[in-house]
Image (cartoon, rainbow, N blue to C red; front, side, top):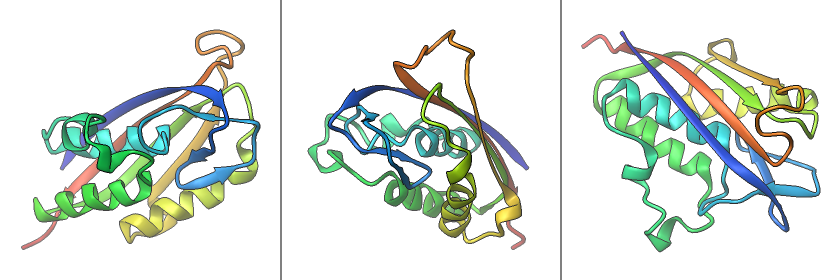
Length: 157
């Protein structure tokens, strides 16, 4: 078994879509980033890469490379999953916490879990997505952050 942790944060800005765990959330602000800035998926990819001791997504998908401009983070997650499988591992479980003052994310959590389960080809019971606020502290509504922890299990050969 291997355990990995990931963290990401992006600023909220006008005229951008808000995408979390591959789900577009209706909101007047979106996350600023080179790709679609899906902080939850970015944290998840960093957790998987960390468990494999392969660095982070900035190393794999540099923001200096124009081919990742506006990239769909779920497609990038698919590449990370392919690397994970190629190294002989499968997802045991993933636990993601999204940190956001607004918008309220509860109505979208099950869709987010389903999107991630589909990406990993696993049951939804292996994917936990939670949302919390910082009670007006920390990011204070100017951004959204996410933490992710994964357990990878070696595939029987």
